[in-house]
Image (cartoon, rainbow, N blue to C red; front, top):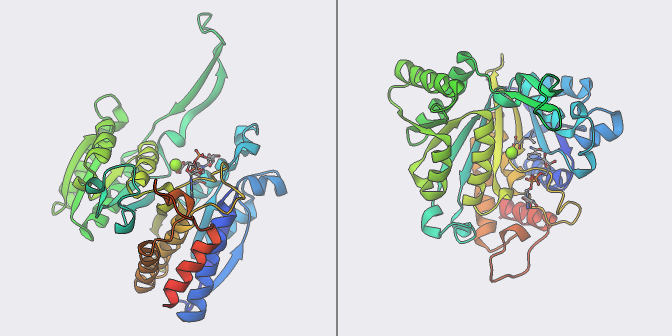
Amino acid sequence: MSDSYSLLILPGDGIGPEVMAEVVKVIDWFQANHGLKFDLSHDLVGGSAYDAHGVPLTDETMARAQSVDAVLLGAVGGPRYDALDFSVKPERGLLRLRKEMDLFANLRPAQCFDALADFSSLKREVVAGLDIVIVRELTSGVYFGQPRGIHADDNNPENEGGRVGINTQRYTSGEIRRVARSAFEMAQRRRGKVCSMEKANVMESGILWREEVQWVHDNEYPDVELSHMYADNGLMQLVRQPGQFDVILTDNLFGDLLSDAAAMLTGSLGMLPSASLGAPMENGRPKALYEPVHGSAPDIAGQGKANPIACILSFAMALRYSFDQGEAASQLERAVERVLAEGVRTADLMGPEGGRPVSTSEMGDRIIAALSA
Ligand SMILES: NC(=O)C1=CN([C@@H]2O[C@H](COP(=O)(O)OP(=O)(O)OC[C@H]3O[C@@H](n4cnc5c(N)ncnc54)[C@H](O)[C@@H]3O)[C@@H](O)[C@H]2O)C=CC1
Ligand SMILES: CC(C)CC(=O)C(=O)O
Ligand SMILES: [Mg+2]
């Protein structure tokens, strides 16, 4: 194992740089107090890369991302870039990173800290103690399938407006099997249950998904309890009785929707971290990108209101999955838990009784203080 880990920091747009600044403080703390050494480099992605270079991700940044131990990303996008050509929209930069690094397994844990059980929009008894992981396929499906585009619908005089928009849901059996293995392995380390979600009742890709997940289960992980659910029912069940789930395995689009909904079980979208992992490299560790589940939150950007916890907990996932520093990861998670238990809240976590919310940087400082305590 190398004694210094290389980490590429891509803050991105909107609240991305604000929450990332707090993560950098946390990284500095671990360097100063934990004997860990990080070789940090910073670069642009999304709208900020477009502003500087005319593209949302340069080839140079892509090459750097391929060469480091891990990438940490804030968020991309914003209304300033809405009118750009689709090919250079900020989100294309992030999708290129995911695709070219082949980060097929997106782990999105949703944990309800006890101190926040009253801040979810659901009742305390529904969310208290919640601890689930969504394993979302990240490099295929309808976000990447061909054909795609917006075309003239020339031979269809009955189409008022005359255009057609196309996206294609496409999955190969190999793509399904490899992400299924990630979910089963995650379940083996947890409570041993996987629920796979698709729409096999109306989509052929859903039928293939169900069959291949079942195949991987029966042939390789028969010890894990596997169930299948249609994704629409799955989302309903997630808000009805989330505690019935351990690991949820699903495709790219459904995973995107399910994980934003799962965020509200934890109190705020500002709480949910994620790890996007590829196959193991020669050193045995996976290619990896860590990022909060949330976006660039243009409605609060630049105001010091963003909750940095999702991004900080994403770094905890990096400590665990890329740097083999499970104890340091747990220490950081406990520091977050302690700060929340002390009643420290950013604005997104304020209950109806109000109180004074802390700023993004105050929250970062409190977490550092808890690490030091
Ligand atoms: N991974 C990424 O970089 C993602 C980027 N986006 C992009 O972000 C932009 C905004 O998208 P939205 O749909 O508004 O989603 P969003 O996740 O940026 O915001 C949704 C709501 O949650 C709040 N929120 C999000 N993160 C928060 C945090 N850390 N602390 C406090 N409140 C927070 C926002 O203020 C907003 O009210 C779009 O351009 C979208 O494409 C969206 C999702 C993921
Ligand atoms: C590329 C992102 C904007 C898509 C998304 O919302 C996500 O991955 O959570
Ligand atoms: Mg999303």
